[in-house]
Length: 488
Image (cartoon, rainbow, N blue to C red; front, side, top):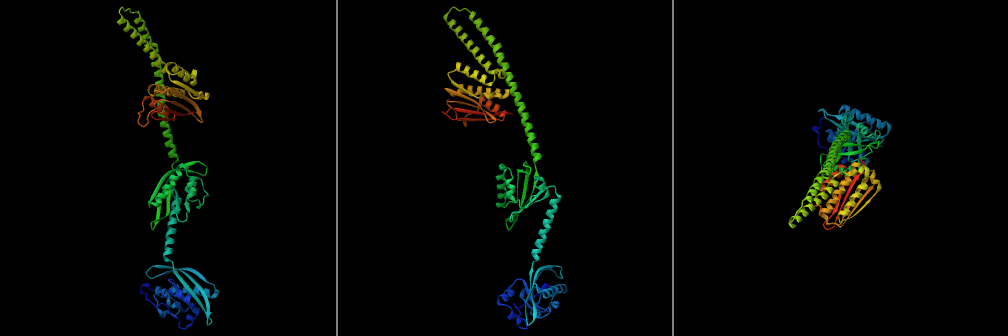
């Protein structure tokens, strides 16, 4: 039977015995007449009593088929199968549903979902109604889907990658065993959807990942990728590289398929290399600071013991010179004054340059001595407030804090025209905080070039992973806050 030879038949055919019209309610008759599915009625002798237009057209029949045996109308294999099912309905009096596949001579196939049901007898003749729905395309789609799922399942089982698939319509997420093993949730179910996954992403990464996934779907992108930290079943975070590909139907995203890669070891190695590099830089900087302090001390001692000695001797010789006229006497006096000024300046510089004896005297005493000396030589009012537990700091950090105070006090004396200076030194949680504030002229930090003094403060603070905060403005004085971690 070739479906190409189908002829158009009349919309509906009345049974020759005249009882079909009377037995079919109007609604049922209209329904069967206009149904897009194949509809028919046979009697207990397998005679075709009724067939709608869809039935006749599909099988290439016309109205002459009515009242003929279906075994004579259909291909033998199909006719016999349908006859046996009709017979079963007659015997049991119960409806029957089945799926049947029909093969045409050209090799093509059609799949029907067939429903058979008994109809109340007419003139003591048993009747059977039937309806067949063409589900060929649906079966093909299901077969293709099953094949795709089987391939995906097989691939996810044999691959070393952690694979996931998110059905965006149902919210169900499939994850293969490798992925479950990766995060430690071997018994997790598909109900653990996207929201569950997002909740386990590190709070600092969560919004970024969520926004990236939504943006990719909203903009019609083919894929997205990101790196984030995921909290596994043991409570530990792993660094995950996640990449997803989006499947669209009619420009609507319906599915995402992706894979995870554990980047934890790579990240740990990167962090280790960075830490080693930072430690190496820190060692170099520490060596530079140590050499600088040593050189400052050497120069300070050299100035005090040698240069000052030379100047003192020069003054003695100058005092031995006898001059007779007033002009030369005034010149001698002026030279003597300059030598004394140089001696005092060198004493000040040498004392400033020599590393304070912090190990013997402590940081508090060293800063107190510095403040007292400044009070004696300047009109600047200085206050120093501190906590005794500052002495628990390491010697290098004490040196750093002392040098920062020296640098900023020098800046205040040189530039600010301040009348008052307050130094606060205290422990705050796990940090040490140094606050130096004055009531001087202040400056605009956005337009002021950082000088050597400030650069030294920043450099010394950065060495200990500390922070420097400057609060100043023209005419508002200046506050410098230095925060250093108590322990390395």
